[in-house]
Structures are given as structure tokens and as C-alpha cells.
Length: 122
Image (cartoon, rainbow, N blue to C red; front, side):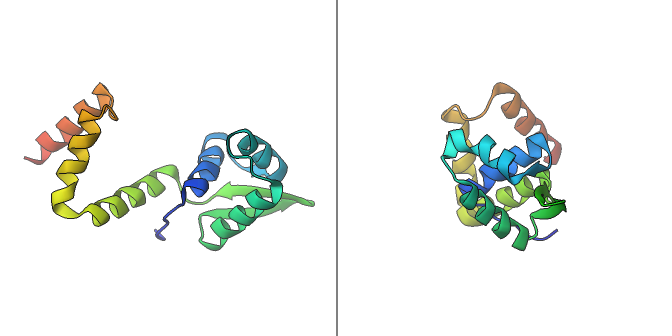
């Protein structure tokens, strides 16, 4: 898998495509506009950048530009997790997880899942 590290804006764009499937540029712009205020030119530029990185594919239906994710959400999340762990290193991982638990960032279900994963490894 090619390595992808998305900016916050790129995550927003990719999340829409993962949730709704391939979209034309006007529809994608409309979907993102309420949250981001982005213009069609901004969405197009970001789409081009994501296409250059291999995260998206652009197809044309006549003159209509259709954006399709190539990278799955799971692949992107796996890469993001890898990037985060690489940044915080060994000692910081426990602190990171502890802060997520204590700060209420994880649901009871997520905590139970993490506990089960850790118990399987020991």
C-alpha cells in the first residue's frame, strides 16, 4: 500500500467519498460547503492533490468529473495510526491511550475492544 498522510481537510473530503461513494465535483463541493465553506476551485485543487498522491481516481462521464477513493478508510486509518505511534514513540503510546481513556475520548465498547486485544497479546 502506498503511504498516505492526509491533512484535516483531506480527511473531510475523503470521509464524504467513503460514506457516499464516487461523486461529481459540484455534488462534493455542495456536500462539503456547509462545514468548510470551500469553493469548487478549492475542492478541485484538493482532489487533484489527492489524485496525484494515489488516494483518489478521477473518471469522466462526458464532461462530468467523478472522484472515486482508491485508498480505503481502513488503509488510511491504519496509516494514520502508524504515523501517530511513530511520532509519539514507545513511552508516549501509553500516555496517549491513557489520556484518551481518561479524557472520555473512547466509548465503553472501544475500551472493551482494546482490553480484549491487549489480553490476547499477553
